[in-house]
Image (cartoon, rainbow, N blue to C red):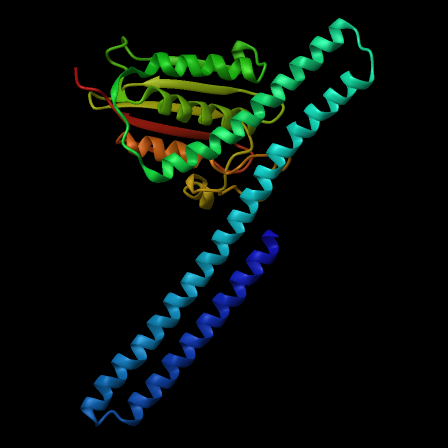
Length: 300
């Protein structure tokens, strides 16, 4: 699907470039033939300039729409998979419980697996809903939040949900006290942003998870969160694109990792609503990624 979409982009882009080149050639030839007719040359320049600009704008619009449709298709496929897989798993466990007599230990294990699949379903639905809310940029009621403590709670939840030991996700708060780590924000939205960053870092770490989480206050105006992993990394041209809605980096080393392409979009939307910024750094593929989130510190 991605190859077909890229082929359409190339076709329309080549056609637009050829038409623009023909328009420029015809316009230039007409101007050369009539260079002594001042008013005709002036009108000709305006006319052919408008045609060329229209062709360029139309081609840009077509290319953008093709890419957007391709991203929407990828999103629908990803969401369908994220919903279908846990549903199929839950159905299988229920059918087993219905048709076979299982002992109490195995029954409890089945219940645990079904609850995990239910959490996965709820997580997918919540991401889609949060993406819709983030797109509307609704105003939030901002209250003082101890950001360092909030990040610590998110780290603990991430360890438990992914069944990881403490050393797999290391947390290093580098702020003097809770007052130094205070931001004005919506605690639930900030929790969603931090959780998405942690989940991404863990998912793309590969078999050996080594994630470093650090909260720092570099100056009196900012507080920063750095989430660093040693996973698959991101090519330099993709570092800004990963925060777009539905966007997923193509040709990932871990192609089996599934997702909706909404996590980092939600992070960026939430951070912008709080007056901050978020960006990613990576030395390249296979060399890990660091995502930096900056927020303005709350006044005392």
